[in-house]
Amino acid sequence: MSYVNRGTGEVINEPVGVTPVVDYHDRVRWGPIISGLLIAIATQLILSAIIGALGAGSIEASGRPRTIAPNIAGNVGIWSTIALLISLFTGGWVTTRACGPMNRNTALLNGAILWATTLAVSSWLLASGVSGAFGIAAYNAGEVINQIQQPGGVAVPQNLPNLTAQQAREVAANIRSGLWWFVFGSLLGLIAAMIGAVVGARNPRNQTSYR
Image (cartoon, rainbow, N blue to C red; front, side):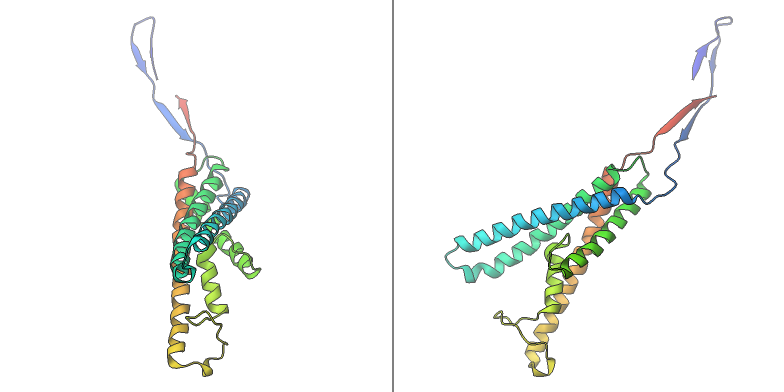
């Protein structure tokens, strides 16, 4: 800060100190995390319903529904993963936006906890028969484990001694692909939640004091 001494006309400069406002003592904010969780689940459910409706409509309008069904299912899986990323990004943004100012490390921490909480709640929803915030990615992994199917779609009894060598390989391949797809989608969801949290975070205020 500068001012002029009227008596001598001398310009006097005083040092300016910038003191950052102290961040929250508790870095984990459960209220905003729960808000982000609800937003993420609601967003994913709505997007999954839209994607599923579009996929079913494409099969209904097709002249060869059995032929295009596998391709439609693959497209639905891809778009469901994209919907997962959108929902977790939105949930992370809401989480930190509902908080007071915080630094980037605190935003990343709350975004990661949102992701973990969403994963736990989604697992419970899947166990209850509801496809939650991890959508098709988690649903496919659970279905591969709980109900093994042949290429023709007929359920195979989970009695491995009765399977041929080729059927056993197909079972193992389905389990492997389903679980890796779940891991890949979950890690992408973690990244999306953390990016959304950083984008939604408001920077801590600086308090200027003059000496």
